[in-house]
Image 1: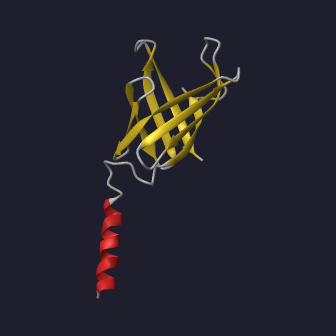
Image 2: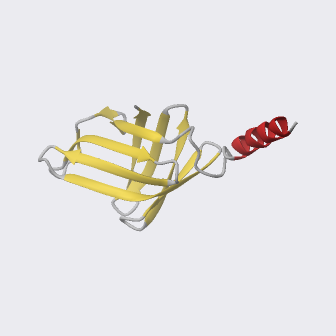
Image 3: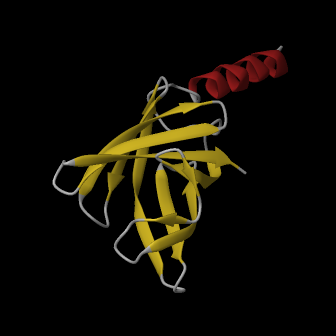
Length: 129
């Protein structure tokens, strides 16, 4: 009887750990940037910076790291925390001290954020590896 009760408790706790308001294993993983504003990589920002790859890793502890690589060999790393509520994902960028949001559907993560003093927006679409 104790084994059945213990098994029931384990199943109940496992179900609680997938609360939609906290990071969970279903979205954790590494995502590769596929498009920016509908264009595939490499992406030329028009300022001499050409993005060749971008890997976003969502860790199960609610932290993330985003590693971008440019055609001149330079890299840029962003780190922060993420949280999810339903399909809305929020990023707290600790590198730039900003916050932005996106959506997630299956293995596709989409981020949209303002740039150039909110004069234009970028939409980035990632695919989980």
